[in-house]
Image (cartoon, rainbow, N blue to C red; front, side, top):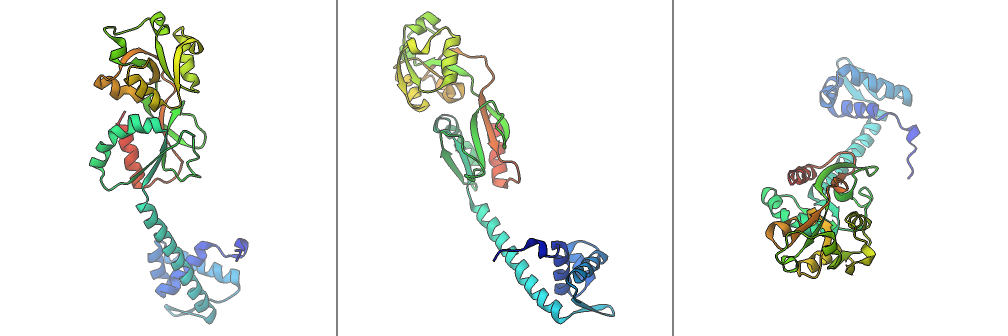
Length: 291
């Protein structure tokens, strides 16, 4: 059945009448709706005028339903109860839904996963669905609560807040560097490289160092994870976002050779505008604390 919305009376008048019928008076209905009894009476009179029917009999201080009023009250009671059940069911289902987060596999593995123990220790009641995707997904269509994105933070249709620096760095394993702590561009040019494919920012960074990417002795990999893994084995120098190799640098698996001073692009937390569940707010606060 297709609803003809233009033929329906205003929701406020239907709600006022349903409350008056349920509670047996305007005063009691006003308390239930948190409005004055005069406001309820006005809405009910407007409904009667629109329908051209008497719905209530005013018997001194009391009210009683006409036959038409009783019929409408029964329909409204059933309808509003159905709406309430649907909303409660939706809220219950949504409350049980894990926080859905979209991000790249590399950022999930190198940045998020090493930190998640802290979140779960503090929030054991919150479930997470970590959904790696190399593409920028539509948060609304895919029902994502949050996204962790690499870029300049100016995507349309989402809220965005800075999460972590993505400044690019050249790194290498200690076994490849030997006693050297830094390398000149000429030294870097003569060495082996392990490179992530199809990354324009990486190529621009290398050119800023005086290195032409196409002229380097290089092995190409399809993902950051593979490039980082190869670099850890001493197979070559690599360019990565500092956020993805900070644990390797801190724990000595990789050594910093050079770093960019650019502030953008960076990693941002993004979410669709509108209401946010408490579970999502708590995960968002935790993410912000990880800067």
